[in-house]
Length: 572
Image 1 (tube, rainbow, N blue to C red):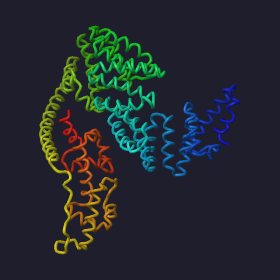
Image 2 (image 1 turned 180 degrees about the vertical axis):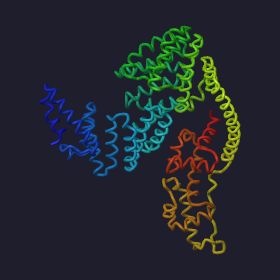
Image 3 (image 1 turned 30 degrees about the horizontal axis):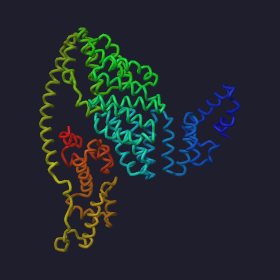
Image 4 (image 1 turned 90 degrees about the vertical axis):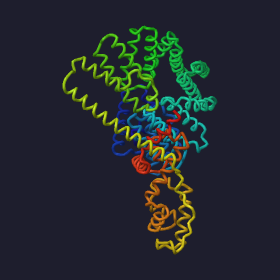
């Protein structure tokens, strides 16, 4: 008899004997730990339960993580033994609900593998959505958007309206943080209209982000409208949890409306609740705008403690975002006015660290943001500050000279490369990416040097046209063997015909078709320009990101990243 069974049976009799209950819990934890190390074993009492039972018990025990995990792992074990991929994917989702943060990425990989094997579009979409949420929580915003867009591709083919709008909200949320505010607004309006009658929290979340987006595009009147609407709707729906976020958003909007006293009062009120929620991201934003409000009122000494709190959260959590960059510029300015060279240097170095994180996570927005201290000026100021603190020595001088020469050389090489890459980009834009279509050829014995029956060649070419028309080349791991089967011939004949009538080796032929497909999408559809190289490689059916980028550069002489940047320039 399992310990779990004993615990369930004995629980009603142990309410007044906490010691016995605690001992049994510890024994169960030990048993689960051993089971995890040696391979999980379903407790005897759960051996004959069906999937519906496990699903119901997980839902009923959500508040009791230990019980919920036991049922979820039993569910997973059963689905693995029966090779039921649909149930395996659902079981992984159930396990992830109570899993530690460190376990979420590997669990999400297993979830995606099971979902793909199930061939269920809704499950595959949900798996990509889950991966995106994990990326989003880790502030890996580009990866999050990438996974959300793939999720949208699958879920949009289903009839699940809730899931479709859940993905739209996730994409909008990420686009807000990446700086694509107008695109986010369009998606959020759809979400607000749908969730109003379907899901209270989704409805309030959508209103909240509309307020934030309108603030970012400078429409403070509409931002105020949505903040006020959110507060009213939260009270009407008896959802007190969202009140703090609407007040937080209203406080930021007060700052931009130059209502500094109201901004300070609003944001000071919300900080205690944000601390209780351990929401350090919104807490640091509140501190920053309180500090900026005092600064605008010429009360720099009152601003300082709040600016320092932003710095402390950055040091502790490594959290920042583009508008918080100014916090460190203000600290540098404050200590410059105090003639405190040592602290100037501290925050100049901190700002360089912030810039590295922003460049990595917010590439689009970090290019647009106004910078009082750009990176080159900051590096220059750093050298001056170091010299003024007694760092004048020969080694630094040699390093400065060396880096100056290196930068001059790299700048010259960058200029030459930039010119060359621009030329290749223009050639690619002028080229016809659909040029690999061939007209029907008259095959006869006179021009047939392949030693293959002309009728067989004609049949292979017709099948090859079908292969191109139906875009079968986008399938993953497409190779000569698989292509030969689709052409209804052998590998030798297929290779010879492709070499003669397409003028390429089979591998290059398949690779170039994939690349032509991607180039056409990037030229004609803006949404693909938001994809990462990993997502583009998957769209084209390459086996890995490295294979995609290598093939793209080999054919076009430029990287996919450069090509997308040049395409986006006219839009920006």
